[in-house]
Image (cartoon, rainbow, N blue to C red; front, side, top):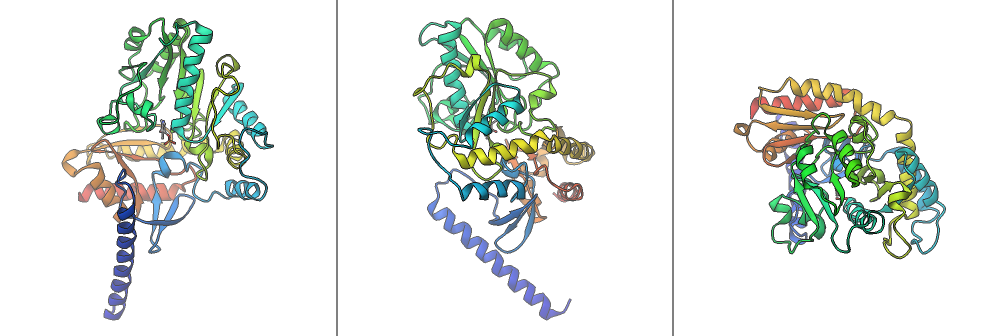
Length: 417
Ligand SMILES: *Cc1c(COP(=O)(O)O)cnc(C)c1O
């Protein structure tokens, strides 16, 4: 390499590094510090790839926590959004809009349920389900006024609102945000007997992530979800499945519950439902449960807006083909094989389902955060969770060769760390 070229490249990359540093400093000066992002400033994205402000490309192996399951700038979803932007975007539920009915019909059909309650963020779907379950308990099951309880799982992640963090057992999520909403009890995830012991006549719901995502892709033990279903039936308690991260293709099926052959009473959906374009969430269930809500008892200014509904319909149409799910399942085989080969080589354990992996890194090699920094230097964006675990969840549209390349980078990082 000639000196001139070398110096030129050096200067250019220095300038890029400086502008990246400046962009990050500007953010830090005016943003609440509730996040600790990797030092990359993304400016655009297409498919599974994103590009930073210096023009460097990275393979996105987080996909916005599965909100971008169908890829950045998905042409079908962008077209649905653009077409709707030109018509109308927000009406409020004070009036009908011509997109919401079709969206509710499409989503109910996909879930084999009767009714849809549209909201915006995942946490709102969870909050809505808590209200629905309580109202069902009082009005249908006959629980005494103010006595309803909901059983939740240790290690859960259901969002960040005050009620939800109150039943989290993660000190970072919970500490100093009390007083906490009463009416929740916690049992170990995966333990049907503990769940049976926690349920009493005032129990209205069991709230469970079929796969615990934020906890590190913790998979349900064989038979567990079927056991939850059986118990909920026998004790007349609603089975509420938080599929906000696990649902809509990630696990190689439409819902993670499908893999266990169970149907919950309520599905909670979010993230990918908005196609990575706008926040769209929903509670989906039958009229016997969701039908308890009466006009004026619950709502949302933006929930069910025509823009979100148009995008949501396009998302459901894609899932109705089964193609994204099949792709996640097929690529998941490669992901699993490659990761299992790393166990004993810097990796202590891996948990995979579909195109979703939790990887416990040997703590001697450094924190999960450090591994993610090293991956970033090699052009792969991933996210740590809880100490030395990292998760991989690329968009389901990722090319097989790109996925294999990302795994090469992980292998190289582990070898050099
Ligand atoms: C992300 C997530 C939520 C919360 O969704 P937000 O849109 O961030 O409010 C709830 N439950 C699970 C399982 C999630 O992964």
